[in-house]
Amino acid sequence: AQSVTQLDSQVPVFEEAPVELRCNYSSSVSVYLFWYVQYPNQGLQLLLKYLSGSTLVESINGFEAEFNKSQTSFHLRKPSVHISDTAEYFCAVSDVNNNDMRFGAGTRLTVKP
Amino acid sequence: ETGVTQSPTHLIKTRGQQVTLRCSSQSGHNTVSWYQQALGQGPQFIFQYYREEENGRGNFPPRFSGLQFPNYSSELNVNALELDDSALYLCASSTGLPGDTQYFGPGTRLTVL
Image 1: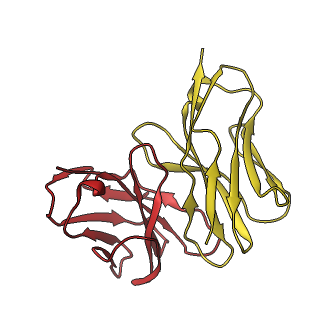
Image 2 (image 1 turned 180 degrees about the vertical axis):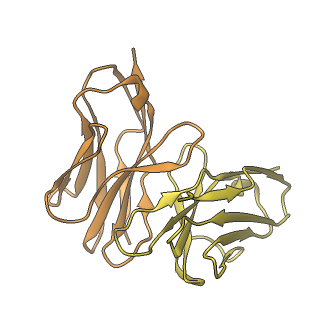
């Protein structure tokens, strides 16, 4: 079985500052990795995912994450955050043989002016 | 293309009652996954349905059961409700292929008194 640990429950940052949300996973098999974002009172939306190939994946709104197999990590980064990035961010993992996901507990990103 | 919809949006029940939550999958998707998200936590995988058959289950007791219909919509049934069942219940639809993106509905907020 897989599991995910998100190391920070809350991350407050100022607008235009860089941010890193940390995610580590545990699995005995090969995995796919995902970051989802949840805005207040909404469902989850996919931000980006790693399936194979380049270990650096990017989203359309400036976030990126790097798959590091040796450290079993998939940290999410953004060089300059906006107020609108304030949300809950969830890291998730699934093994390469099925489609059911295991989520971390989430990191609440709060961007302050 | 219609997205994933869930009904009802909110529900209040008392301990010991039974509840049915509904989910309509996105067009072209034959797989529905259900998750329980307690306040301040990440989504926990309940089970997944693929072409009307249960295709994976998380660590939830048998009083959590489900159905998937020929049009790939789905129901989640919970019997003998407990206070700890209070949560946001999310469904997600996908093609079921490993690594495929799951598209989430807005959720049903269940409160058990």
